[in-house]
Length: 110
Image 1 (tube, rainbow, N blue to C red):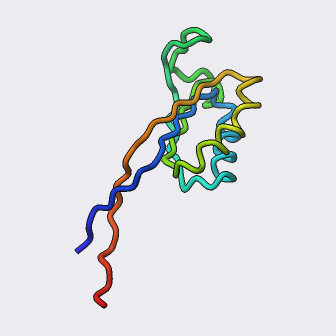
Image 2: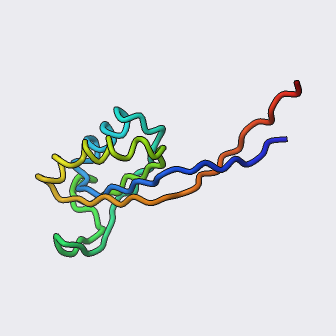
């Protein structure tokens, strides 16, 4: 029988304009993130003002959030890669401690 294994990880949530989604996903891939989820069409309010979540012409005209669960050792390299980008473009990064559970196969009998 499979069991649930819990692993301590870090969640990184990165909000950028849709036109910059490729930069962020490429950075996550190069840093070694195992995967990510992309949420399109965000709305809300931040230091750059209010943002409506409707599509204007395409997905590049709205905000997106890229969410990834990574080992703690990857957080600093990802933040270092994002720093020059965020110096020039609108965006925000959130990090938090999480526990990730995945089904793992049982250990073979010895």
